Image (cartoon, rainbow, N blue to C red; front, side):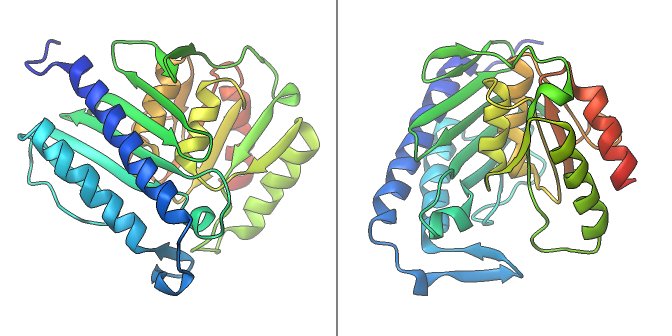
Length: 267
């Protein structure tokens, strides 16, 4: 399918605004006042840094592609059936940011009729910008990246996200964690789904799984994983994961095996 927009140009502009927003977030971290933290719900935090970064991103992208709508974590703007849709998390890993911990990231994706055209994840603390478009390879800081070649879960390192707002499935989740810790090289919880996906894409981890996610958490990173040679599904093994809240991303080679673990314990 051909597009009337210049995807490469828009990708480059998106990289710039992600880095600009990241620089703002990094600057504010030096002076951040914890008393300005607000709560959107149990363990769901937001600060002026999130909202200001989002406004900065939206204002620039609105100029870059005026015909596009927006789906954003902090709800700065909305969409009304536009063919093009920006999906934005201005600060993925807000709790990490508030506590001075890495990673935390800017995540921006562009869709056309539910097809993701480009994705950018800028991990702020390491100054690493991961990106891809639907017709390109995946890159980090202009160097091509790819998923790992590991073909056995027992030889892989995995990343997950712990439940933090809803705990009704904790027993099952803990059983899965126990199994993964005993039967792989290890299990990590880093605190930024966007960064987690980027780390799968560049081969630092063989897979990432989490339940309770939103489109802005995964839209950009999922495309980067795919363009790096990996696979992304929901916990049922289906590819319409974006609005399903549960995601498994892997190097592809261990996907079926890990999906079996997940379905065994979280069914």
